[in-house]
Length: 242
Length: 231
Image 1 (tube, each protein chain N blue to C red):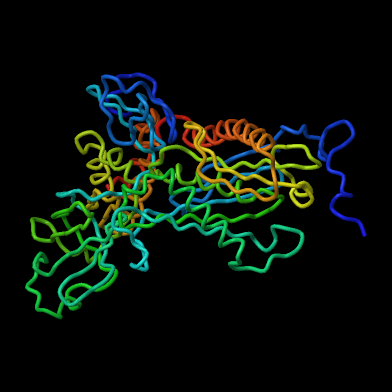
Image 2 (cartoon, rainbow over the protein chains, first blue to last red):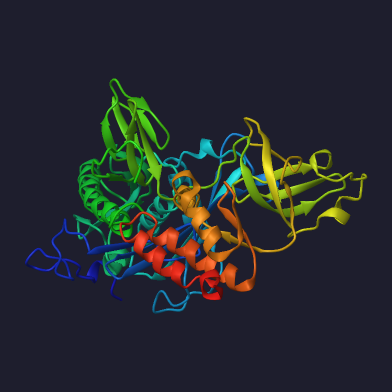
């Protein structure tokens, strides 16, 4: 029986299966303010991934037991649409979506000035419409743009980006095959202006050198995505004060 | 245009973006000082006035302040008080002692129920963001008729115009009573045509109030105003 090791992910010419270089990112487009009913919203396409984020609030936190007297709580709901992958996903929460919702909320709490809105709640809904590896990063990026669009005060934007290892080589921004059959995955949430890391997970093994290289790729990609985020927010309000 | 720009080009900033060095400058709202640099915390336009750098946010939630005249709706009723939706992150509290009627304990429901709209004033906001409203004051009352429209908080100044000029023009054009609440709710009362026209005009002020073409667009809309048609 063939194992994962039999899957060839790097071509002989050193490029990846989709023709990208090892430190090349999939194309990213961002549009802010796509949902008129939400206080803030954004759609991010990253390769074949499509994520929509909507932000409501700040609002009174219900039930009252979730209220914090000194800060706002960020209530994140990450969900993959049933049609987002070729295998239909059963609708509703599952362990994976709960985990991603939690880590995304914690990452966002580190940038949002939550102490400005004690006892209140900021609701962030992330819906993955199409998935091709790296959806938690795309969702985090979409949430950051939607929060900025909603006028929520933040220390910085936050950019979700991932690197990993395939066939012993560190590569930036894994696609589906690389994610499924690769050796490691390192999604991070980076604050582009300060260079801080607000969220980091690692699946698989990386040596310290490989980890440093992967982080170097992530920081480079985060800077590129940050430009696209800023451009999306500026485009929404171009043509004068809105 | 934002105050304090003196004709300078408006600068749009996003959260985390550096605005300038913090030395000799004071940090206003929508910004904070970090490592000798003033950074924006909100998406908005940079404003510099009297050595204070701040960011005029494009979107913002309503934060109640003492003295604000607001249009609120009843969210919950208790025996001796009403919880009011003030269009902000926190509910306002209207105790029966600050209602304009003599209310017996347990009879609050007979005066106002869930969904009723009132014109109220913010009496007090404490450090925990507890908001107390009052309906004791000239003109403060339950709004039994008319319709309520919502506008973003940041568009209220634009809707009022300089010295309330724009809102007065709208009032005269549609022959309606219009009250702009500080919380982004606008109450319009008049005949159906007038209310419909006022709604169009409010939308126009929101979308074009800051543009050079606004005057021409508002004049064109005024020509179609119901009052002009009747005359």
